[in-house]
Length: 290
Image 1: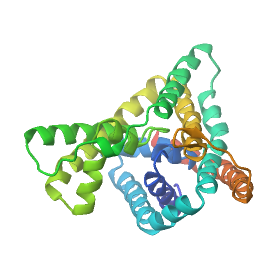
Image 2: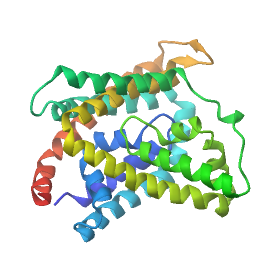
Image 3: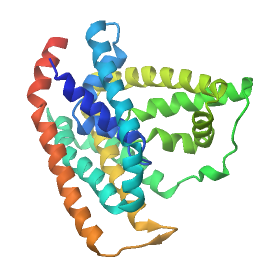
């Protein structure tokens, strides 16, 4: 059985990722090597109900702890050490690439699988070029039928995308013009506005997990090559936050940049070690599920 302390810690990492713009919780699930197990638990929650619920509860508790305990710390680090902070997460992603590639080529490598890889990578490049301004979006403060439909639909799509590696749920909210409304509703405790958001998130996570599971079962290699494209594509998204400031490329080699290189190496080694470390624990888990 997978170590639930590790699952809790993985949830902490996922929670931290969700409070950082441009960092995907799904990517961190891949980094922590629990992505398959997470999708299985969500999509087949009634099968082995007790074990799946315990797994999801530990993930949820960890994510909640990560958000509550590290929100201020991450905010401080991003404000005072943005280069080192972003490079650490880049390192986590880089360290997970060998694991994802190995799973994508577990049977054999096919040229045709480069197509979903290229499409996924292209999607991430698109997110670099097109970054919407959240300040221009209208804010919904009252709930009516139209607002309910819009918020429910936006939350469903964002939540479904949130569990996809490489895609930030908050970015999808920005694209759909609902990000500011959601942030204000949480800040102001506007429960009426939060109702369609919560319902949409629940539907999106459950539906998205089932779609991903279907793809992993029917087209495992193509799906993992898509995930590989999304994961690799998330690297320039993070680097843009460091080097592209107010529409101008900026680079200064200083002490923070030197430290950032070290944090990148530490992040890469940490992700590679974690991915390899729990591989032995994950194999028995998969055999139990079959």
